[in-house]
Length: 516
Image 1 (cartoon, rainbow, N blue to C red):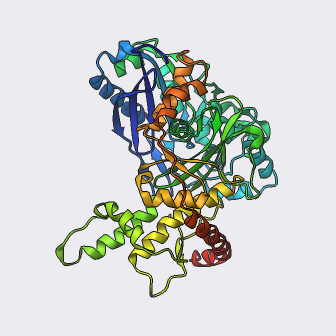
Image 2: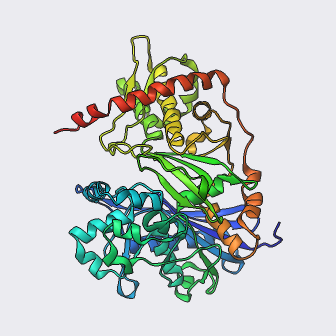
Image 3: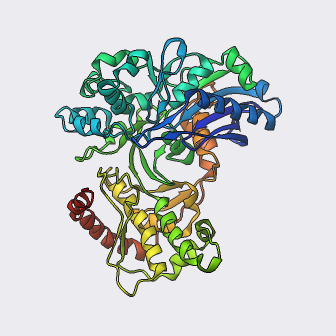
């Protein structure tokens, strides 16, 4: 274990909050500071964010961290940055922003995704990237801009992602990392750009917009004097460009431990389901969905499926309950009912009631893509009450998780869970039974910031490689394995077949219901 009072600062620029977190070199979290993220939405499907404000928020978070940690500047051994994935952050002459960033939430490229997905070359693009095409991605957004807003790209010199923009402000270097570069424009096997992919997106003439690819575990750049002055740190401090936040969170939460690959699900508003795999073990599905995202470990990637609606399904049914309970002038918030979830779940007798959790108005994206997909109960009868419906909603999240892992091959032998909902006994039990594997919960408070800070710990030589860093930073914080209930495993096996049958059979009806 490293013997130093040095500090690594992990910056995690998420969609909701930008955080700066201080860690000791052996992984102990010392303090954190944050700034609330801001973005604008438009009726045309646009979701945009100011580049200048994002950098100002980063400076604010770093300054706030300095107020909590004595002598932060002189004690900082390295800084590492990750952030929300996908999206398009254009910079031009003098590193000035070319308009606001298009976030991963932006839906304007939908027609371009439809057009590109129908082309014969799209399968070759998918085979190289391992990633299904969707409106979130910079490739689709650039292709849309090139066709409908070419003046934007004419003014741009480089297309960055969120963390890349912050890295530019910290170091003056335009670059991106192997994870975002390869799942968007490259090949996950080589972690480099791929001409087949770029041409399939119709972006051959815009190739110069793609920045240099650097691996933050091997290359760092010094903090500039200007950035140091703004943030209250020391010029020359090594800065590491992390991988995309999705895999940084998985790394910090235990997607790999003891040199062994595992699975990790983040259960938040959306569900993110990831399996660490050696490159030859990746199984690409026929539907062409999901992501393959490199980890900062040679030869190891994460295969990912994401479902659009996870805890927002629970929020929905609790809001209905809260509205009904607020009658007569008594105000009840849905958040007041969250502590009652486990009791309601236990109260409900296991039945054959199914729920498909496609509550998002964006439809579903994993393991299938259908913008018209909608939520629904199947098997509802007069004997079912509110507790039964709530239980079906939670079990539906277990079914959706299994559906995602099934698209990547066999069920994982163990699952690590992150996200606030992971504390629910009902949800943990449902996930465990659905995938027929034990679950562990990490006590790591800020997994994304920790994951990127681990990259810096390797980069500065505090650890010889990522697996030795994981042994100190991740493994000790994993809780005991919680085994699935054998009776629930058998029941979920049976229900899952019906779950798949219903979602496949009802798809034509979703399309008809979407007609105006």
